[in-house]
Length: 212
Image 1: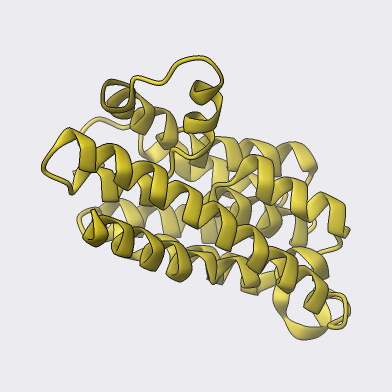
Image 2 (image 1 turned 30 degrees about the vertical axis):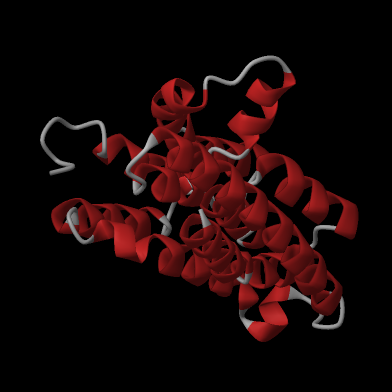
């Protein structure tokens, strides 16, 4: 039990630190403090949040930002299919467990050998990440107020770079798909509205056999 809790807290702290970047980047992209915190508290999915502010910072339409974020968050639904049998949540706990179904909580849970440890790993990791992520987001948002506009510091591109850093480790088994997506995104950005190239890259994942 101590080992699981230690792992969960460590993952929570390490992941939570990304929240500083999100808060700062969202602030200089033009979002107010309330909007930033609502995104972090309610959306609570790092990849989706960075995708959202990346589109907004680049001048994209809100619908493109929302769609991009939603598509990247679909994977959490697949985690829920596995976790439902592990957690067997009831009542209000279904809502809470759905909110905490993220990469880290699912990963720590899946790494455990017995059902009790799997449940502990999920809840401890999910809560730890949620607390540290939102605290760090608040700190980053406050700091971002002193930075000025996104373009002044080049942070309109930094949001995309931060998102890339977040997902890069997950691309090691999908090099061809990653390269194709990069080409589509770069070429599309030359003549399409901000956010649309990101949506086009999602279509590549739907081509049979391309994700292997």
